[in-house]
Length: 457
Image 1 (tube, rainbow, N blue to C red):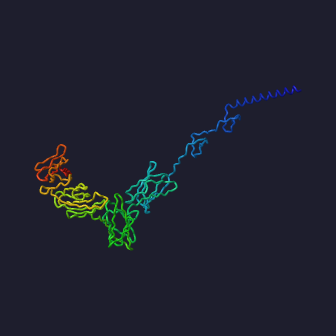
Image 2 (image 1 turned 45 degrees about the vertical axis):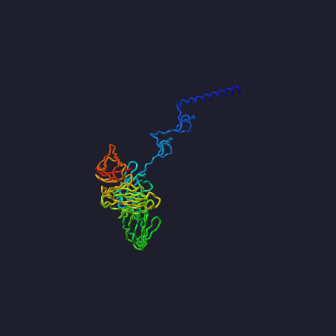
Image 3 (image 1 turned 180 degrees about the vertical axis):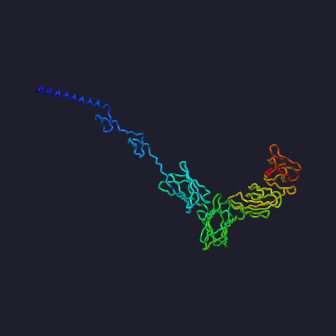
């Protein structure tokens, strides 16, 4: 019995093994290729352990519009970057107004962005409407449609989706007499209307000192932090402008009634705009440090005017206001020359070579007809003057001196002999004659005015 039972167990094991082998063989035949479509880690057909990764559903093109980094259609991992959302058009209202709050009607402006532009014109209420996308817009204005003296505050505006009302500000730069917008003085006499207990502000641009004068005892002027009141019914302030700078001051009505008056800008006596009329042939001039005193002298004959000075610090210039000819500066020399005609007004500007101290400078004037009967004396080594076309002027200089003129358009006559420049345009000769001085005539042969320089050494 024991042998029979052992034999039975052995047959049983063999039959089970054959059965298991037959089952595996059957599955392998049935499952020609594994697939795990439901992503459970087992073959969908035979349940054998198997994975083919996450399944990708059929999708013509992936798109991730909600930026969750998965395809919106099939759920596959996919990222096409942050989506650019193009905002829809909205209606915006633009209000054009001045900085004082007044609206501007009929103002034309153009908005430009992203290669497109739109032109708008404000209505009676100062408003203009447009359907736009939110963006940053450049603004260009038709200035002919803006009020005179007004200028836009900005040339760019950002339009957002949150705000539909946009204000475009225009600054009114027209002077109104306030501290922010002072009146600009351009005339020597200005009419002023100032309310009771009110103050008006002014700007003056100039390079020379001027006096502000107002003939009214109820007016005061504030300048450089100081307040000036009327003396004998007139308030006077000296403005001392700096080159290129604006000089500011204010006037105040200290009364309880409106005042209508005149404000005058007066140049100080002795300034270039208000020179001292010189009727004598000499003067002693006190010259402030760094300044000049101006005189006006009128020629009574044709000829050459000589201004001379004994002061070692003299620095004098002559200007013929009729011809605009200007002499060289004396710069401490014995004097200078200028050609004149009868009636010409000659400005004499007296300054000093010492610009740190007040200096006294003497001046003496003498007009010569520059003829043989009244020749012009040469008192320095160099004589500069402007000669009209064909003009012949007679000078005297010491005998034995050498005369030189570097100018091809002159001739010199001495003792009846006329000399002309050489091939290089230079005329040189020794002055010879009887006595201590000799006369010579210099002629301008140019067919126009000629600046001539004579050297006597």
